[in-house]
Amino acid sequence: EFMASNPEHRWALIRGRLGPQQVITGDLLMPKNVAGKVPVVVMSHGSDGITTGMHEVWAKPLNEAGYAVFMVDSFTPRDSKKISGTGEQLTWNTTVNISDAVYALKLLSTHPQIDASRIYHMGWSRGGSAVTSAMWPNYRLPITKSESIKWAGSIALYPGCNQRYKNPTLKITAPVLYLLGEKDDMTPAPACVEEAQQLAAEGNPITYKVYPGAYHVFDRPNQPYRKFQEGTFAKCAIDTVMPSRANDPAPWGPAYNRATNQTLATPQERDAAIKQCAATLWITVESNPKAREQAVQDVLAFLASNQ
Image 1 (cartoon, rainbow, N blue to C red):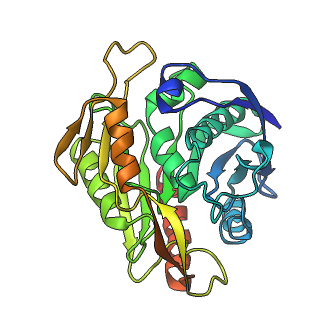
Image 2: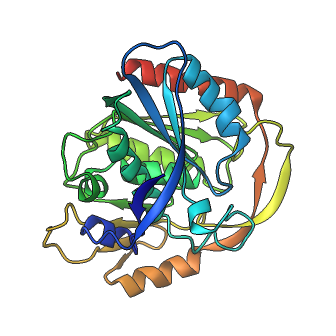
Image 3: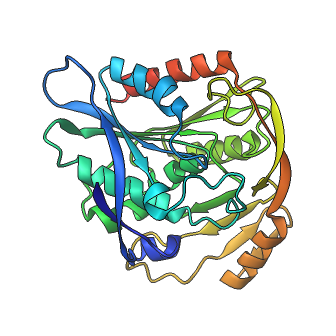
């Protein structure tokens, strides 16, 4: 158990309004037969919560490669097992997932068996979106209170990139890798490719890879081909400028709707635009063993090259 909090929304977190305290739980899985302090991968789960795939597909090879794994459970302490298929996909406050990951970073930076200079962040789907937010210093610093407590690298598997939150004056401080499914219709790859290319052009250390023929949750084991209706922001195309720090005097936003080429000058206008583009759509899931195996190798290579 560790203490985190419940920020009301992204702006509140960045402004240092961290919200009511919240006890969070996590499983720390240590590698065997490793001497000295070890690197660790903080895992942010997706909308199904902590899954067997996180254990079997990811934790095992990471442990075997000498990395500790810390699986953060953002749902159970908040009385939820999962939000997929429950109608909460369009209303869940992802800011708490971001916050939990940063509190885990802060906690592990003090752990006697963890190398504080090699703490990585990895997430899937909604957890991938937590990664693509927590990689920015304006989300991290209100909690860590220290420039020295930071990620050594970040890995986002099929995050949602149709809604983007950024500040053009900031830079990402550690390498980032996006892993995407070509046929993903829940969190479509093209929006993430566009985002990664734009961030890289602005001087941020970000790369991406798209796996051919892969659907959403392609790394999940034993997932048969299935189509079902789910809430998604896949039809959205909205950028929102965020504060750069707690004392940033800049006003709210603005936001910009890429689909309509409209500036959204107020939070109310932005909320109305999101309400219009958010929808319950048919989405597809299926295991892709080839993409899964390659993704594991790609993550191990990314970690090894960024130590």
